[in-house]
Image (cartoon, rainbow, N blue to C red):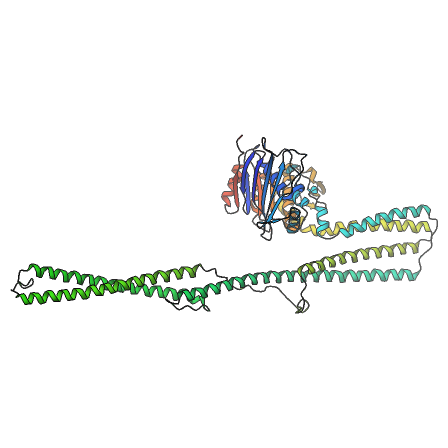
Length: 598
């Protein structure tokens, strides 16, 4: 998803830095402010020439404009791309500056990272995620869905087989012009052809089973790799945690004994030691208060004896000089003992305070230690066929095996079609006695084979697009109830049934086309790519109030389910966007933009 977009000298914006978060973000501004410029800049920064080179984008008075996009890839790496656009449209573009997680990469690798991370070509992604054409004028078939699905599901071999058949048809037409007569095929040839069809059909079934097994093995290997990565990370954290505990136990040894092997007892031991020190301090301070009172009492008695002028300050009886001297001596001795005890207690108090601070520091240090958490568990499944104690294939090798298995499936299916065509041609040859009739039959078979491959390709793509079509129809019914069911084919063309007839999408109303394009873009992104963000430019324009609320609601909710994490919508409908944000403040955000002065 897009995390940040920074522009300098880009049309209305001298210097703007927008930060984006997961969820749905409505970029709100009046018309003419430059909302479309933001999407255009983001598309160009991320996808480069696939997003088309912007024209007249450099701010007046500036020699160039720059656009920087920070994108979080599905594997959570951060891809940062900065592109500079010179003022002169004919000037050559300098290579972009690209970084992943702050580490510089070659400019050419940025597009490869996008293609690999999002499982789609940048040219296809930019049409889906950041279409520059106004949404109510967009033709769903222009997304390039057919070409993308051909690559995504590996049916390009069928397309090449169709092209080969076209060449064979032309060659057959030449033979027909020169042919005169033919002869029927014998029974042994027909039997051999039937055996070939059966053998190819069995090979196709085996290839399908092998492809499914290769897919299972690759998925298990990926799960195992993720587990091992997490385990290594946990072991590093656990080792660091154990070392830190050992260092803490060594530092705490003068005050409390800690067991690094049982860290769960450390905080209790430290807390017990701290409480014991606190109790000792409190008892010591009670004793100090008692001694201070005793010292004051002795001083008071001495003062009273001094002022008594020979009479006992208590009973007022006359005291001789020796008695007074002995009483004063006793007071002085007692006061000396009290002061000595108070000095000793003061030193002990200082020691306890130092220990208390030290233990409290140990407690804080223990609490700040980075705990490694629970040990990861291995969720991957293994069996005898995938467990090899000598050599384990790498993920790249398993992925290559999966691609080879898929190619084998396509090849076997093509072989089945070819052998069936040959059998059909032989059967036609057997029924035709004239060479011209046989050649016409063969031409018909070739054309039928071409049509069959085209139909198989369309059928395969249509089968893969059926879940998408059903989801589009279901969501269509929520936005536009009672307006007919939708029909979506692999080319991206959409129609809906009205009174038993199919109405093409070109005949839909503006609101219907807008809702349809939004649904298709979101669902194709979810089902046929790994892209997790999508930007819509003014999708609420020209909609009636009910459709506007429904479409806005879809955009607000679409980022909270599935792998599509971020929706960005430019609009001037500030009240509607604000109501959606108030209803779901955790998922919906508003960003207000304004141009730079001058």
